[in-house]
Length: 193
Image (cartoon, rainbow, N blue to C red; front, top):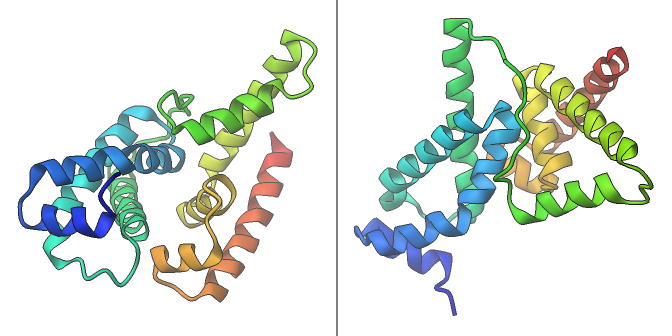
């Protein structure tokens, strides 16, 4: 039986590196996947996943358990990704293209594989679906940060409005209206592709 998150958090907060390593192993794929979907490439996602866990470790003694560890980790990840995007903006780094996520967690890989192969009768159909997925991803990365983030959390990660509101620290109504706007902008841009 695996120790509960709260036990691992307490032990990690006291300097137990084995307990912290268990937390990292438990959540690194989810954090990596969120960062990859938000930023669009694996190298940056790897770096920012590490940065997320560094920030987590430094802040563990202050964790009060008012939200779940997962919600807190997603909040840290969102902040780390936003910081990176701000740095890029200051340096005028342009998005170079999305690299297919080979390290994404098993659940997302299975959904992707099932989509590619469901009812497919030829390799051409699989290729068409891959191209469609790439187009969706590129369109997603052309969106402003606030829209991209909310679409990734709701449509790709499947988070509830409540979870998103906790992570973004805003009211549920704001989440709903921002999601509505994000969907509208995405639809318009996707039609241009």
